[in-house]
Length: 262
Length: 280
Image (cartoon, rainbow over all chains, first blue to last red; front, side, top):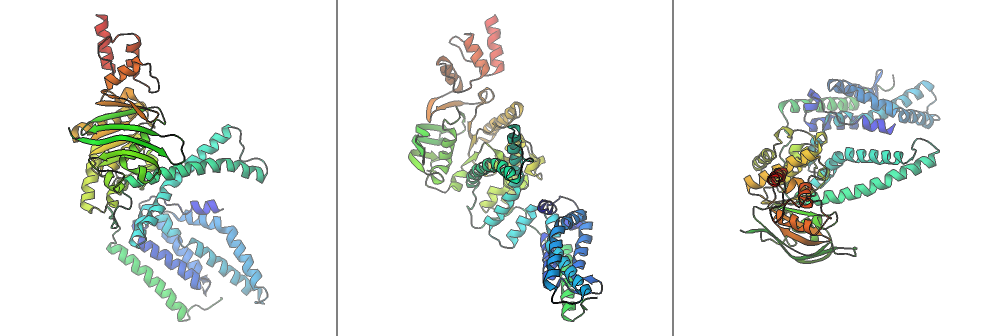
């Protein structure tokens, strides 16, 4: 489950209007989804909860970005967690709410809110390259050492994954079975993968540190960048749209336009 | 000729180790040389490079004695970033020295770290791309590259610093023969055309000695031979030294006693020439 959740957040390089947007605008949109879901995600307007609207908006935007299927993968991957939230909500409010229909509405609202919460950054992660993310972190004045750690982790993850696969293959050729036996045996088999992987990773970390030194890492306190992210008129318009909609939702809430349960 | 690298009586023992990895090493590499260091694995080649660039003793602790100068600068006393601008070091494994997510960013990485202006970075990386002939890889991700391409990018990223000296620690170890030969030819071209001093540690002497102006052989932390490649190969053959894989054709010519007092052939062309002379 958790694996499919992570897979569904992996960036895919595509040429779409959403992919071309400034990452700051996408971050703003995702933050807007997150904050709205957090603050009043379980408010209902007619038959539609705010959270449902958030998920549908993301679905449409990711449809434009030709990545809607990955949002559905996230939703599918999160189903057991959402079901758990539903059960816990029912259980928690059982004594407080006498009406069963209202109880189900509340539990459904909480579940959808939870789903909106965990999918809120799908738009950002699916359409923002790690490189853009690194530049965004710099723009947000996050110290370069953290930005670099993130970029290096993204850069090395596939290398380490390949290495893990090589170790697994080497162990298999020696007769180790990873899919058979009881859980204790399986975990023990994985220890044989984990230890060489850890040793290799430590060696790699040392070699990387050497390479960083000779590449003048940290030499200047005023590090420059070759390519910067630049907002265009289109990005400003998109940011304005995100802010207007978010503002409208907040206004609707405080003006009492959300009517509560249908 | 002015010296690019001077090493005098250098000894080093890593902290926790019982043995000295370098023992009383003395070496002088002049500007414009294309020198090759050979030796069995663990003979101290990589440690010597780390001393030249300053990683030892700045990053690795241990017993360090002797004197190293890179263009007159003591690498043990100045920031490594300053030495790196004079002498660029390319490591064996390109995967551990490419950090960015595009080739362009990787080549620009060190220049960004130095805080250079964008125009200057652009100029330098364009030059490095041109020298290594990898303009077409500019927007690619390092994931998409072959081993040879990755090593070229790693060299380009060091060349972008515009060093006067290029140190390469077994750069062809993960490459196939043809790719290794092409890369070594390119390095020789850089040495000739741009006047960059090259010091390279290499196992494939068949490929690299054709172009080398000098061969240095290390054994158990000591330099046991240091002369023009032909003289060193002759000496090692006469001593039946087998810790270094000498060029096969040199060995054949030596075993057949074709050379006499004449020159040892280092290339196929020289070997054929020798055979033809002998048949006459």
